[in-house]
Length: 127
Image 1: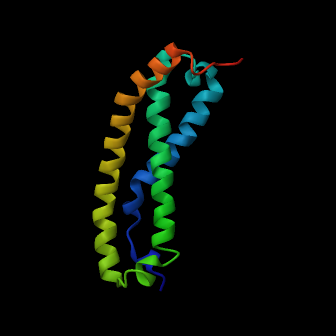
Image 2: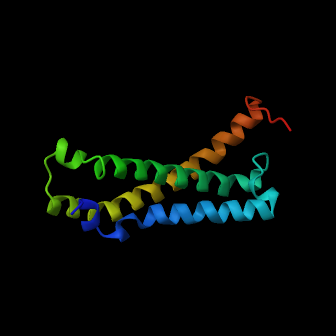
Image 3: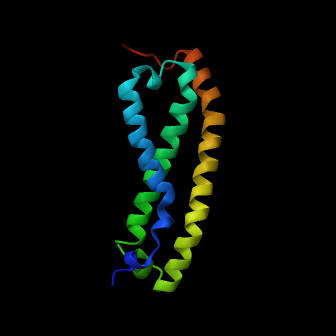
């Protein structure tokens, strides 16, 4: 039996949340084009937060792909099924906490940086 079938699906809850957010954002942006206006400082908060979170979860999904289906857990580390299950359960909590913290830090630090870069005239928007 493949090891992926022995891992609980809830271990990827944050990846599923990111996927749902992608579909929600696509739906909302199609209804209201002004929600994803990169020129607007008012929209910058949610654009930066969503982009960061979705990008981090894409990275997590790639790492899961390398670790489980590509079997690096066995090739490089020699882990058995029980060890991988323990890592999977711990990773479900730890990875989502890191993603949340990284998203918060990116928004808190990113908005002032983008604002300063815009004022310096480094970035120019073309219609």
